[in-house]
Amino acid sequence: MRMGLGKRNNNNQRGGGGGSSRMLQIRRAMTDPNYDTYDKLQAHKILSAEANLIDVSIHGEENIALEDNDYSGVIGHFCPLNFQVQKDNPPDSPMFRDVVSKSQGCSNGENVIKVDLKEAVTLSREFDTFATEKEYDVTYYNVPKQLQLKGVVFHESRCGSTLAANTMMAMDPMRHRVYSESSPPIAAIKACGELYEDCSVEASAYLLRDIIYMMGRSNDPNEEHLFFKFQSITTRNMDTFRKAFPETPWIYLYREPVEVMMSQLDVPQMRMANCVRSHSRSEMVTKFVARSGYHPQDLDDEEWCAIHLATLCESAIKNLNDADGLGMAVNYHKDLVHDFLDTVFPKHFDVPLDQEAIDRVMEVSGIYSKNRGRQGEFKADSEEKEKKASDGIREASSLFLEPSFHTLQDSRYNIKDR
Image 1 (cartoon, rainbow, N blue to C red):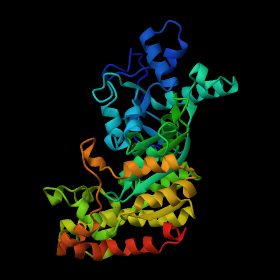
Image 2 (cartoon, helix red, strand yellow; image 1 turned 90 degrees about the vertical axis):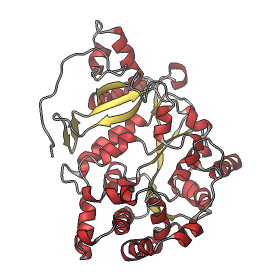
Image 3 (cartoon, rainbow, N blue to C red; image 1 turned 30 degrees about the vertical axis):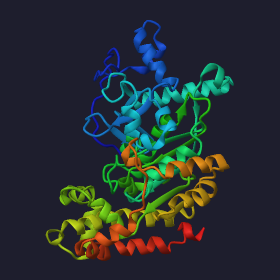
Image 4 (cartoon, rainbow, N blue to C red; image 1 turned 180 degrees about the horizontal axis):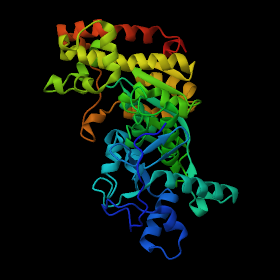
């Protein structure tokens, strides 16, 4: 299925970096002996995995086409990332945007290289295959390698997902690469629409595979394992991930309804909370309201929030059942880190831990990441949230969110039954 077909621009232009809006013609840069030397260096940064995929442009372009086994018009944005800031102190750089902001020239575009993503992926695969066939020593020749995707975290939001990302890194900072709510995957996962009205699940999965391939290329000889924590909204299109990576284990983190709603609505203006303001753009929310028998004009902000969260949980339930064991439901509680250490990492993600790894995880689990480097320990707040909850929040959570919460609790794929 195609979306937004148009004419492609093949005009040669110098450079895709330095804050330029121009595109680097990566294949010509690598094959034309007379091509600009600067462009050749930029192209080599991508092929050698010195420059990493930090964003992709899909929507708003006339020349985009997504098909089940191909795509065109998707722009990849690459920049050399300083992953060491995250490895050294996960709670200080808990999100992908923190790593980008601490990597020279990546936030302001100064060192960003823009290329046709399909062309970059094709060349990278050719480059990697050639290096493998020649049996080059990656440590000697600095040839990139493909990291092994070990596990993925989906979540309801405000339920321990950042703790999950930090602990996945802390387990083994030298060998692990963790992308926490990075930009490129969500672009692919949402590319075809919530209900795949713009293109098929196969089309978005095809694009996602290429994106993960590029993000999993590493020029660090010590790195081996790859992990992702996706944004909560990607749960609605979990089918895309499962189609792209049908053998990769994942978890879905969720939380007691009143607690998660209290966290969601802890903003100066309730109508600006993510779970409230997004309802007008969601077909899943529209369908949920229609089958509930309520009229949209009769719903208040607390109810919109509960419905938003319920659509995430319902999608997770469907995919847990369809995945038949590759997915695991994990409920937030004050000792969540022990669920990671005892079950999720060693048994579900198949990543063994020694005592040093356990000690590192326990150390970072006590630091509150939202302080980003400032002093402060993490403290469980479930009881406080329950006490302060308004009647409106309690009623909305009971009416719309509790049914899916209890279904997750009773699921045969819940961690408590593993």
